[in-house]
Length: 68
Image 1 (cartoon, rainbow, N blue to C red):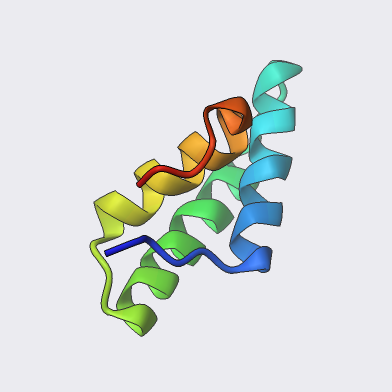
Image 2: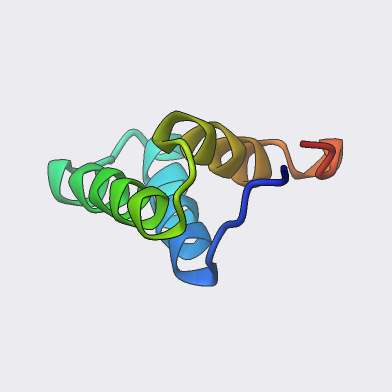
């Protein structure tokens, strides 16, 4: 089963990744991403860990494509 990701979740992770690249990740941003991942996984019945892994792969390694 493919992991479903919302646009909002992707945007949050992109913001967090941008902050990480600048060594400026805030607790607020990290907390917001983690809370959104948990809420999304719960709402869609998906594994929280699989959602997080798919999200990070999509945002951090987009050239690898979506073969999950």
